[in-house]
Image (cartoon, rainbow, N blue to C red; front, side):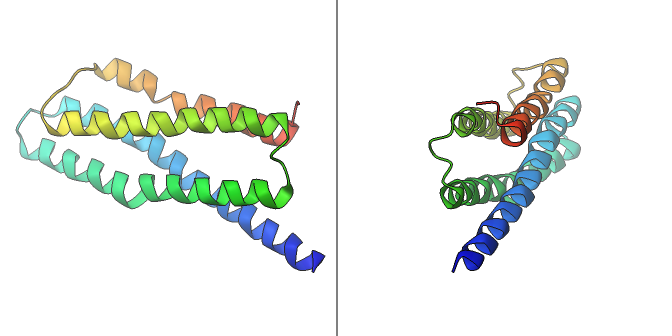
Length: 147
């Protein structure tokens, strides 16, 4: 029985890592799409293509990857009995932050689709660094387990 549980844990962890990669890829791509979208002429065919691309990225990659990442992450933490660990609590704080960032990106995409362009391309390029910084902290917390 212990061998089965060990294998289940490994499959949960592998799935979690795979879907984190998908989610992070989307979090890196979407703000870049927004930059290109904002640089297109308002009302143009190019802008319509960016609106379509952004919606597909959200619906096909980003949101499903977010959901599966959370489900597999919770299952993995449960399987390894890590709920009392300080590093996991800190990781969850950063993952909640990334989830909020994801939600903000979805909202910003809807604004762009309506023709609103509240941020500059430079600010969007800076915001594109958020997932990379969060990922670095999360990886350190999971691998090093500093507390």
